[in-house]
Amino acid sequence: MEKTIDEKAQGNTLILEAKKENSKKLYLESYGCAMNFSDSEIVASILADQGYNTTNLMEEADLVLVNTCSIRDKAEQTIRKRLEKYNAVKRSSNPKMKVGVLGCMAERLKEKLLEEEKIVDLVVGPDAYKDIPNLLQEVEEGREAVNVILSKEETYGDISPVRLGGNGITAFVSITRGCDNMCTFCVVPFTRGRERSRDPHSILNEINDLAERGYKEITLLGQNVDSYLWYGGGLKKDFKNASEMQKVTATDFAQLLDLVATAQPKMRIRFSTSNPQDMCEDVLHVVAKHKNICNHIHLPVQSGSTRILKEMNRQHTREEYIKLIDKILEIIPDCIISQDMIIGFPTETEADHQDTLSLMEYVKYGFGYMYKYSERPGTLAARKLEDDVPEEIKSRRLTEVVNLQQKHSAFRTESFLGKTVTVLIEKESKKNVDEWSGRTEHNNVAVFPKRNYKPGDFVKVKVNDCTTATLIGEAVGYS
Ligand code: SAH
Ligand code: F3S
Image (cartoon, rainbow, N blue to C red; front, side):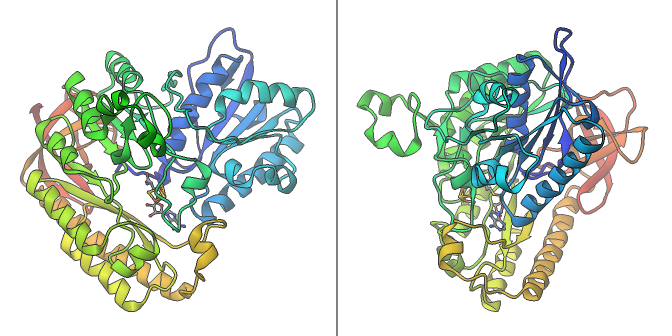
């Protein structure tokens, strides 16, 4: 199943086709959300022009980079352990290697990382990747190098990311960077800066190029895609100061989605992440209008309690969220909705928790990502609210939420039994070499005997059986 944070992909190294003229070796490991994985492709592209080919052997790398996540404490602890591992390799077999930390943890800890982790030579925030060649020069000359400047404009629109590490069929295309929402628990606005959108022309060029290279599915990516707004460049918050001309010619998310779906009618289009406070009806009509836009919306709610939502600064109530769900289903009747949930936010009572469970009962999400609250230094919640829900209560509530989600996932998956669904074949099934694995527009994984089909084909699959999240069936023709 596609995930905003794909647990299976965590720590993957990015391997690209080697350029003959390149002699240096880059080992690039990525953690966290899809945006980080997409950023790593940009970094690899920048370094390919600096003489680096990728490797999956740390022992032979000249440069080891790790793209990091700060969303929860555990994510940062994972990175600290990896840095220890790099250090061990450096000491035992590769004394020449340099180590750089990229991404959210670099941005959050800045120079402190150099002091705390003696192994680190280079610290680069998410808006400073174009500066990596200069920073490497500094490192070569024996200095530690840091650039954590957040930008008003940077969207990397002019860099075409290298994709050869993926499956050649599905790709992420980033459309916005940063976030202005300031949810009180969230570190993203601090690590990724203010929200800005990418030029629709550069987005379309990238997608057209992917289509030419045989890609069949793209996911438009942003912390908050509904907030997309292009008015010639600059921060979203400065739109109010734009000229009249800029205002009338601006492109919002509904328009962008329409443009993309129209330009590539044969490609499957997804988008992530939607935010309830910013999602508008126009977007829903565009989804309903285009067959090639998947009827699946990832719509994190975080809690079912209006009081907690207010403490989280989520800008909507439980009732408003329910109205939005009703609206989605009115306009896109077979839409599957998925969630992110935070369990045990400060002050969460048993009644608040019950509100979360009853909201889940109402929506019956297709799937979800559920985590215990993790206090993040510097966020408003950390400054204003004590992390007062005891660990064992957090754990118990998380189990209840996860179990209920399992039940709903099974309910949603079973609803496809006996039906015929369209599947985009992505790869061989991990469990059976004679079967293909792909996904439906509702984001269920489907497996079925290979026959003469091949990866990249859209096929009709008759569903005969299922597990909680996987459809099992047989192909009955091309779609
Ligand atoms: N809008 C973003 C959200 C980024 S964070 C997106 O594109 O997905 C992803 C998810 O991590 C959030 O929806 C939230 O459920 C979870 N999360 C964020 N901060 C957290 C924290 N401090 N503790 C636990 N979970 C958190
Ligand atoms: Fe974080 Fe809320 Fe933005 S969860 S990424 S501040 S929408």
